[in-house]
Picture 1 (tube, rainbow, N blue to C red):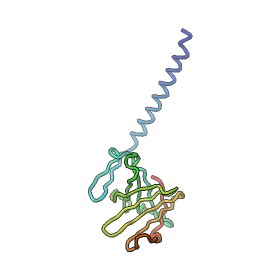
Picture 2: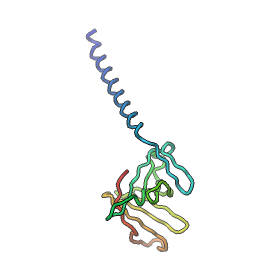
Picture 3: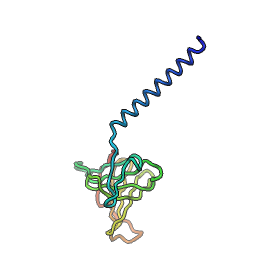
Picture 4: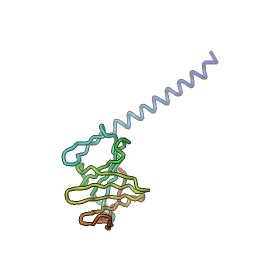
Length: 151
C-alpha cells in the first residue's frame, strides 16, 4: 500500500494541475469575444474561421486620440502572407499582403487609385506610404506617422 502512495499522490497532483489549467483556459475563453471584420467591401472575416487576429491600433503620433488605422495579421500559419488594414477605427477595410521585413512589420495593398504600405518599426512607430504617381522603382517619403500599439 505504501508503494502506491507516491504514485497516487503524483496522479492526484497532475489531475489537479490539469483541471486548474483547463479552468483558467475556459475562464479566459469565456471573456474573449470572437471578432469579425469586413474586408474588400462585403467579405466578413471571422476569427472563428481564420484564427485569432493579431493587430496594431495606430493613432496620431503627436496627439494620440482615437484610432485612425488598424493593421493586423491572422494567427493561423496558413494565412501568414496575408493581413488587413481597417480604416477610421472601424471594422471595415482591405485585405493586404503582409511580410516581416527584418524587425519591421509591413502591409502592402492596392486599389483602383494606387499602391499603399504601412510599416511598423520595433518601437511602435508606424509610417504610411502612398505610391500613387511614384514611378516604379523610386522611393517616396511617408505621408503620415503614427504611434501603434499591439491590441
